[in-house]
Amino acid sequence: MREEKLTALILTVLLSIAAALYLFPVYWMVSTATKTRLDALSIPPKWIYKPTLEHFKAIFSRGSGSSFAHQLLNSFIVSFASTGLVTIFGSLAGYAFSRFPLKAKDDLLFFILSTRMLPPIVVIIPLAVMYRSLGLFDTRLGLIIAYTVFNLSFAVWMMKSFVDEIPKEYEEAAMVDGYSRLRAFLKFVLPEMRTGMVATAIFSLITSWNEFTFALLLTADKARTAPPSIAQSMGVSGTNWGYIAAGSLLLVIPVAAFTFILRKHLLRGFTFGAIKG
Amino acid sequence: MRIGDTGLKWLFLAPTLLLLLFIVVFPLIWSLGLSFCKYNATRDEPPLFVGLQNYRRLLSSPDVWRRFTVTGRYVLLAVAGEFALGFGLALLLNRRFYGKGLITTLFLLPMMFSPVVIGTFFRFMLDPNWGIVDHVLSKLGLPRIAWTSDPRFAIYSLVICDVWIWTPFMILMTLAGLSTVPPYLYEAAEIDRASWWLKFRYITLPHIAPILILALLFRTMDAIRFFDQVYVLTGGGPGEVTETVPFYIYKVAFSYWRTGESCALAYILVIVIIGLSSIYIHYLNKVRGR
Image (cartoon, rainbow over all chains, first blue to last red; front, side, top):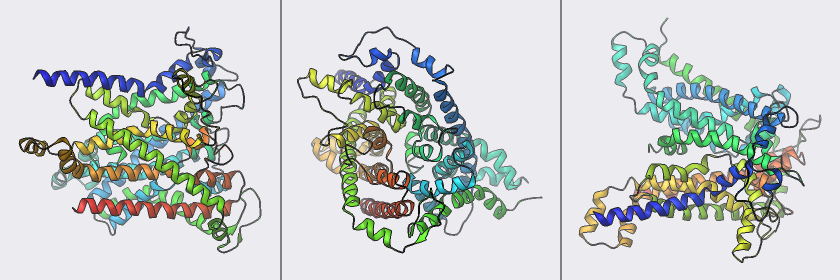
């Protein structure tokens, strides 16, 4: 149908323009990050300029910039370590919730979900007091534990929804053949859970990588991650916006890449497995 | 040795349940205790039991009520903006066009970014001296606005930033809802020559209502819970006109160090959140029951 094709074409053009306008802040971040300190503040803005990598160099060079590089490293270590833990624990618990009978299972699952609905600040106040007396304050380990717990409720629900889709016959057939439940799980169910585990892991990786409140209040200097450091890099005067934009970009770009990998599972992730998408 | 099903069940559940017990349940019980005490976490003095004094003082304080009003306004404006924009864009994105997967994913990107990083950059874009937003406004012949420092507009700078980040979530949820409408219903309506509005009102809306309510529930809760954008965009200012409740709790706990009082206010906020979510869930069940 000719008319239909024309409508589709017009819509494509319109939505492309709309997407470009919507993502203007991202373009502006890239542009600010590659401008000199002076160019970044120029009004009227310089649309055409000589791009520079000075801010990225400053971030990774020794001296004044090295503290941000250190915080990026902290972000990296804390995100990956907590993601590893949360994926393992969440998969095991997700399997258990999906397959085994349990008293008050729905109540327990709802309770696990509700821990995620709490405002972070509510948990952080007692946690900060506790961490100080346990020596976990301003340590990567402390933040890794906090992020693991923070993402656990999500991981359990997400993994349960994936395990629910794997037919029970997988391990039942194996158990008839003499496998123990544990070996049947490891050999036949776990490989089927791979997609779910990858989706859960990427989600928790992004959440931890982006997290602000726990990092702000449970770390000070040694274990500080990048997001609170970006937030606090605005000075009263003479803020170096090019530098901040460059740092922000280093946080944003990996997330954008992962979003494309994850795009089939976004819906399930944001609804805790409730909507399969 | 073979592990029985019961053994395996508890083995698999143990790490999750123990972590939640030690890092969530135990601290929450402790902070409930502290909420009845006068306590400063930076001093060596032990907590002093004062009964309901913290709660009484907080609930009768106009400062606290003002923060609840600010939070309510912020949440209402932001969620309504996200809903309107996201719903409209989703209706367009649900139609047939080229490059659908790519364009849709591009629209979804902002919700994956760190809100605190985006907030920081919005502060730059909304700056009255160096910001691109005011430059565009003045080019269009509109007055410049001191977004984050003018008491009349500061809350809108928070709303604008939140809408930019979270409209994608509303797009995602609306698209999911639209995909559940069986196409044969539209075909049947086509035969009956039903108008666009009739189709929307009697086919689309009933099908997507549950997921829309779920989307609103998620967004309302998140907008109340977090204070990332307040922290970087306005710092609660000018004065205190954009101090939301969680941000105020943060200040009471970590600037004024009135730890006991902050725990009490945290519990008041949790009760408000539980109340609000049960209203949403009530409507959700009502819509689903039809």
